[in-house]
Image (tube, rainbow, N blue to C red; front, side, top):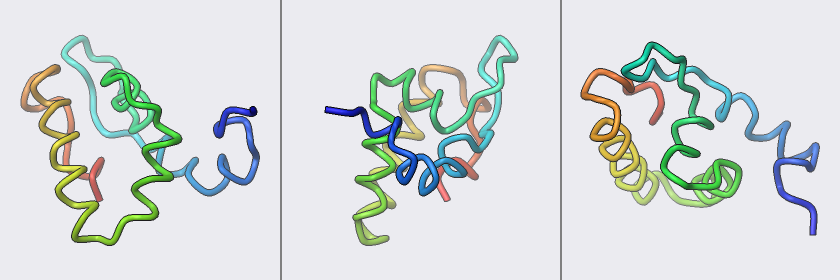
Length: 85
């Protein structure tokens, strides 16, 4: 089975979202949505696909939980809210 990230239709659909910069970690390393999710041991491509299928009222709490986990790992200023829009 081909990983979703290797399929060009998936990459085109979610690439802008996953490669969007969201801030820096405590070492000054640029984080993208993709890297922030990967640091949480979440497959970024699967998460993007799952979020795209959810209604806004279900996606909101899920992304809020992800943001909280990221901030806890990297400090309160590491991730700005654009990650979760």
